[in-house]
Length: 74
Image 1 (cartoon, rainbow, N blue to C red):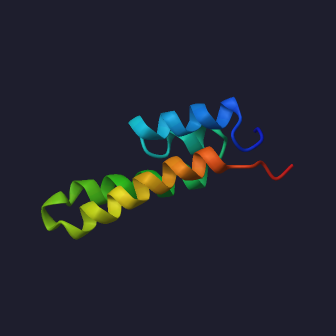
Image 2: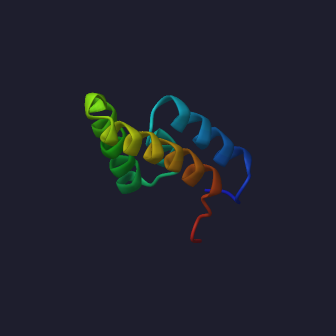
Image 3: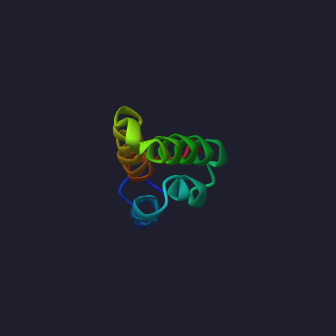
């Protein structure tokens, strides 16, 4: 997509704030988007067990940072 820190990566990171994995989907990384969405929503769904919710929050933050720092391989 774009260089690290570019406008596209900023938009992707903002998308991840509201819906985990959406930023990766915007960047065209379907597998990463699915993995982040499943891990985050799975962790948040088990909030009452505390540990999965913390893990979900960590993956949510990781998804945001991953989208912001992404560099295309081309």
